[in-house]
Image (cartoon, rainbow, N blue to C red):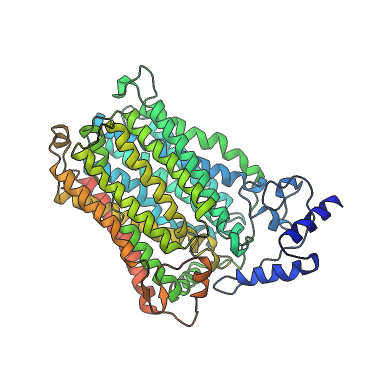
Length: 552
């Protein structure tokens, strides 16, 4: 009775009388209807008592069923989603733990050039361009009647096995590290991440329009905090004198891979026991049917036009291909210093995600993109001060760290709108495929940006010996070119085509722009041609550099 009075009081505080609650919920559900009309999820009312810390009181539930899924499904911290929470922790650590030790090992032990280290970055990113295929796999081919659990665990099993393989190698070669230590385990982690994202989208169907994307933001925040932990691990654990570091102790590169494989085995696999799957919102579709759904989704003007802007924005965010080698050979940073630099960048990235969730969640996206892009570009240009040795008395380590950390914070603020822009448009039953299609599009653009960076390094080559001897002319040119490219997208944020804004103001305008009668077969054709063409070109470039490291 006390709980019922408490909920009635909360409703009055929100301006809702008890007898009008059903009407308000109906209006909210109508506002968040998907782009393609599908069977709606029903949310039977239940009474929850106790401490409300998880969604709408899911922390107080003693039983988690499909009947009360509307309570726990929209919370990242509910018991059935503990494995999703653990996934984001482990994927965050995996993204950053070896991000410093492996390039350091490549440069300092194997004497790899900047093209090889940039290819390492590209191969660690390339699998994310395959996300759409993983989404189709989990949506169309359930295993034992389940379309999420087998793929989540199977992906992590591949990841763990590859890490154990590198541990068993006496002296890992470039090929070992690029394929078995980077590309294949990342493919496994990608499969698991696709499933986790699909579960987030399924849960987001129970969020109202005002909070649509909140669960997605929280998932990225957890992952980003975990990358901080991973960065610290890479800095502190791989820094022995024997491996070119500064300390008398530390793990070998093989032992680092062993630890990375053990973490999900211990902290994620046991949580399978608590995992619950939401049923698909529609009948299982064949590959042909789901491909048709993807085509119908993309050909709507309100979808493909903003998607092309997102592609351009990501592809122009070209990283300096010689930056990692410059830190090691030009500035003579140790593995610990580079790891600390990236860790501080991860911390500021987490701060950026928190700031977005807390302060910028409802801000207009064009304004957000303009100030974040220009500020990010300004910090990119500040890297020239390092190259010209204008650090104004600030130690070069802290100068480089400040540049990188601020760029990370600002980048994550403008990253989240890309992830939640189309959430309300995804129909039930295709969460894994369509969300993977959207995120893969961005990943493909980022991969092409890496490839362009590698190509620029072929035009203005930067060798390790040139960096060591202070011959930084080409490095300076690359910094000018890449920094300028990063600022270009702000010129187009207010552009419209066919009456559709390339960057809507917010989620509500994204929905208002939708008109199923306004479609373009040419737009969808161009989308998929660029999509698959970018994947093939990126894969070819990666294989080319692995086959012939001196190709440039």
